Length: 248
Image (tube, helix red, strand yellow):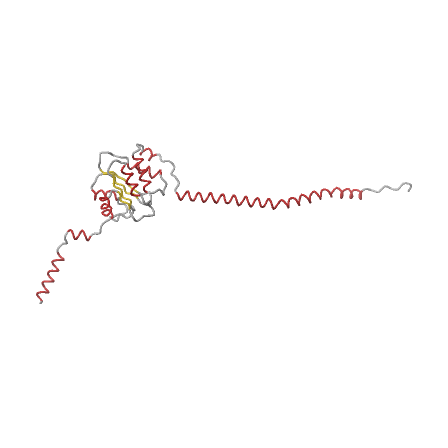
């Protein structure tokens, strides 16, 4: 009996001392975000996160796919939050991680679903595109709340325009966001309402002052007509009486 227990204990010690197989170790390690996105990009070169449905239009993936197809080179797009990457380092770029896992040449784009943040880079290929200038120009020419499909569509237009650097270095005035437009419209409505209120108040004041003005005018005119008679009576009282004739 003791020999059996001894065999079991020794067997457990041997198993603990031996390293786990590679397959078991891989299963034990959690899948990183880069691994997950790279696996999705192998199936479809445009990956759109499903964690931001309100920030993206329903046809976001279709619009992005149609836009990058015009570049004429392989393109891989990941629309995903750009904070907190797989390595745990916030300053780590996701682009080289995806390139390292896919090992495919082409244009790599990582874009945020709810903010202007993003990055673009080209790996390999004989046709070089002004991607960084085009991305910077697109960010400068769109409002802050422009959707990610709008940003990528404009980016592709600028990259193919032949004026990417010129537009990046000479940006036009940034359009107003929808929030800013709504606030400006509210301010304009408030100003119109204030003008109307002041107009009504001023008109009411003017109308209420008309009877008072008429009364004051009437009293003044009446006082003016009475004043000469009073003055004439006073003069007559002050005038000395002439002595009667024949009296000495």
